[in-house]
Amino acid sequence: MNSKTRAKAGPEVASSKDDFWPAVIEFTLSQKAWWMSVCEEFGLTAMQGHALRNLDPDRPVAMSALADFLTCDASNVTGIVDKLEKRGLVARQGAGHDRRIKMLAVTEEGRRLRDSMSARILEPPAAIASVSPADRRRLAAVLRAIVDERAAAAAPARKKVVL
Amino acid sequence: MNSKTRAKAGPEVASSKDDFWPAVIEFTLSQKAWWMSVCEEFGLTAMQGHALRNLDPDRPVAMSALADFLTCDASNVTGIVDKLEKRGLVARQGAGHDRRIKMLAVTEEGRRLRDSMSARILEPPAAIASVSPADRRRLAAVLRAIVDERAAAAAPARKKVVL
DNA sequence: TATTGTTATACTCTATAACTATA
DNA sequence: TATAGTTATAGAGTATAACAATA
Image 1 (cartoon, rainbow over the protein chains, first blue to last red):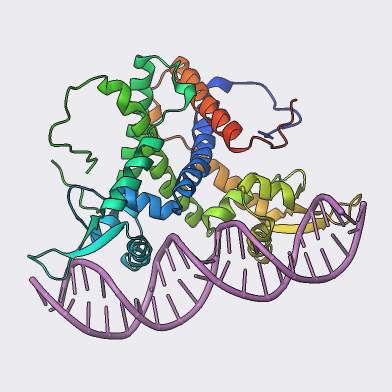
Image 2: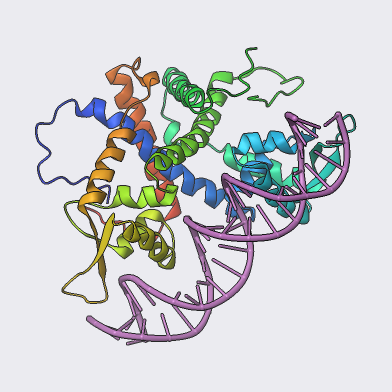
């Protein structure tokens, strides 16, 4: 049921142009389901998966940085990290220079799970095999431009470090 | 912080190819935040927005069909529809031929809100303006192919009506 | 005073299981 | 028996507000 089955769609004008953005939106929805299923494979919820994905096995990450990445409140991160820590995937550590800050380190078990999940995520769908390198570059560029555009619109007063 | 800042990345092989899929994943995340903000504009949660989007102003939709679209349990849909109905955006109706089934009709107020939201959603980001019609067709086809592939993998024994 | 993270609280989303009413 | 939807319950995510420790 892809629907939008309008009885009569009226004059078929610029259909190829108008289909692009709807296709992008439809794509996004399918990705959500895909992400949940991937996380489920590893016994994680969607947010726990996002959190673990953002952590760095080589270098502890501050709670606040994780909250920033997940775009959710710090109090929320506390609960999410609690569950990851209870499962032994991450560990809270002091930051040393600033004792308010807590850094999140990935445990050995967490690293293994994270690596497995990364490999799983990066399995490209078969459907992109036929796409030429040029098209890949173009599509990737478009998607990144949209990301940047939306991010700029959503966070007008964010850090926005101008490297 | 796009990171993956590996100290030494080794031989830089096929970098343009390997960046494609990561770009797609990153895009998906930004879309989630975007969708939430759009729904918020209209006083809806993300799921309420999805539900309203799937309903048809011209033709009532069964609860079960909505559950299917949202890929969540029927008991969950009950609560989501409760809130939409309490706000006067949708109304439960009998199906006539099968009195177990409840159809969801969009109210006049619901239709207005839905139309506004649709218009808002279909505002294409400025970033896609530079993409040629030919590229749009190709890129849309890629995205739809991925959607179909993932849907087929996720729902092997689904209805899958072969129109 | 301001910041980092936690706790308390409340609401939404989520699934499972038990239930009602149909079929 | 099987199906459509509800209710009860419990776990997870979510934000706000109040708080402790630290800067």
